[in-house]
Amino acid sequence: MPRRVLIQLDGDTQPSTFDAIVAVDAGADVLLQHGGVTAAGVVPLVHGAMFTRGGGGLASTAIFVGGSDVAAAEAVAAKVQEAFFGPLRVGVLIDPSGANTTAAAAVVSAVRHLPLGGGSAEPLAAVILGGTGPVGQRVARLLAGKGLSVAIASRSLPRAEATARLIEKTASSSRVAAVEAHAPIQPGTPLAKVLAEADVIVAAGAAGASLLDRAGRSLVERARVLIDLNAVPPAGIDGVLADDKGRTEGHAVLYGALGVGSMKMKIHRAAIERIFTDNGAVLDAEELLALGEALA
Image 1 (cartoon, rainbow, N blue to C red):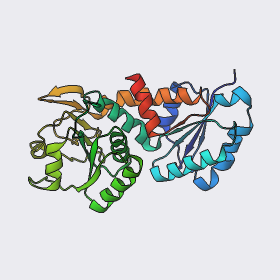
Image 2 (image 1 turned 45 degrees about the vertical axis):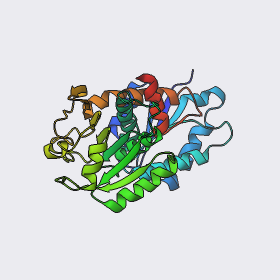
Image 3 (image 1 turned 180 degrees about the vertical axis):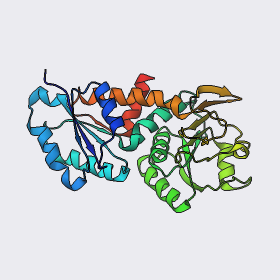
Image 4 (image 1 turned 90 degrees about the horizontal axis):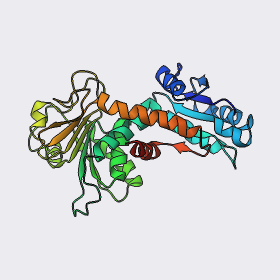
């Protein structure tokens, strides 16, 4: 059996050590790290992966696309897939900044507490604070794919509107709206209204950014799930602890970054295993969510 070779394509000058360690722990025998990778220069690297092994040996070669610039990584991932033809292809995992695995883990955590498929006339509602960032966009996309009505909150209303339009193209059966977010949150504002009507609230802002303070939480009336993906103090959602993992508070369950992180790591490791067993696999956010749901 050929050794498992993982080719790490990272847009940053120094490829992520986090992604490298997870790959080794998940079963990669050999890790080939390439930094500063761009869409314009990736095809020769892909061809090198495709043409050195044939038949069943291709399943022992896989590609991981990462980096801190999510848009650039997605462009690289698109070029990787364009380079394949016929049976000459290898498994691909797309997870820049850990956005896809984190979003998948957050949605797995949320939906286990939601009555999905209940046939209600009104869809469940979610608010994504910091919803225009890499993780926030994917959480919104995955929840919309589950049929939830999603409000994307951002300090920049034009950015929120652009994100909402983009997500609606992939989840046409769900309503995706944009709402402007400013601190402190004032009663009677559009953000206060969607918070009061939300079943799920996810904070996906920058590290150390408080998005829902104590006064803001007083506006939350019916939310069943509160998820804060920020591990750096202060909390993104007041009162949510980083290690919360389904802690009950009133009628809501709380998840912090570390609580979600355990599922994220399970998804990441399982994804590495998958791309080494299926050379046709391309794992983006939706595929990683399905993988996480199978693990839950």
